[in-house]
Amino acid sequence: MKMQSRRLAALVAVGLTATLSLTACGNKDNGDAGSGGSASGAASITFLPKNLGNPYFDTSDAGGKKAIGELGGTYAEVGPDTATPDSQVQFINTAAQQGVDALVVSANDPNAICDALNEASSAGTKIVTFDSDTDPSCRDLYVNQADAAGIAKVQVDMIADQIGDSGEVAILSAAANATNQNAWIDLMKKDLTDNHPNITLVDTVYGDDDDQTSFDKTAALLQSHPNLKGIISPTTVGIAAAARYLSTSDAKGKVALTGLGTPNQMREYVKDGTVTEFALWNPADLGYLAAYAADALVKGDITGAEGDTFTAGDLGDYTVGADSVVLLGDPFKFNADNIDDFDF
Ligand code: RAM
Image (cartoon, rainbow, N blue to C red; front, top):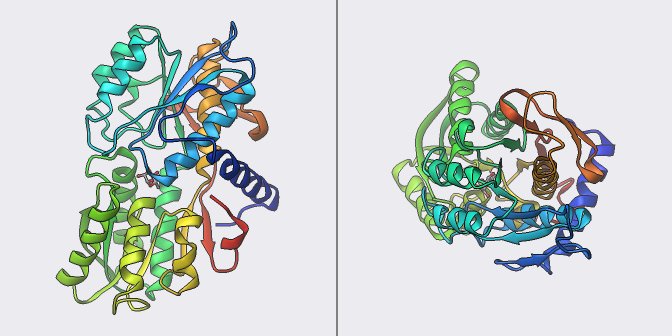
């Protein structure tokens, strides 16, 4: 997938900015992001990632914090330690009780948090999902990182390329109920069946977006499938753990690994030859866009209806699409030629 140089420059710039602001962003960050604090008209927006301690969400939420700073609002980040289906419920309830203006959530399960979100919504909190959606009835807007079909295709294209379009592959995913990974996996399966008859998907396993679980599942995959030629891991936690395992195993250079990763977590494994190429969007851009969308909902500039438009700071103008979805852009491929251009 080609990316225009203007967009690439923006990606690098936002990535660098996000990295700088990361130093000021602890796991549970709470407080005024802008100099004006929550002056009248300024929104309080709370980010609720799938789990804390996941560098992907550290970066996305730092993007959200930057946007809220520009808007003069109040930023907070709360979240569970584990990416389980209902671990986010207590944080949603608390945010609603606090009268937070908007919640920006990446869901571990499409339905398990719906009751809590609906209650928060009835109490006046705007609900934005980003990264991983809920059932559409439980939120005002979903900020989607990239078209699901495009995310699926880029991963299938990369593994096909890396294993000569033939042989056994497996998927190492995140939590078993994750809306985003499950949508991508369904589309990858279809693409493999339709377009890659010589590739066989032999297993799909779940590392729960937990580093150790993902590491152990990688070891188990290699044991159960001695003819495995490739692993696709559509999660930044999974691909980094799998790369760490492969890098010191006999399978290094023999079993291909690709999927979705962050450049900072994957750099050493690209340099040592464990990984050839992987993909992602810029999580900082995603959080930044979600914060601007949440603010536009709070201020009543948009309702989430198809055709609504708003401006997301440096990223420019966006239009709400069908099913109240706002699309960030295209995935981007990282490899030895470009990985040093990125810092997130
Ligand atoms: C992990 C999470 C997140 C996903 C990325 C690719 O960090 O599962 O939801 O979007 O990977």
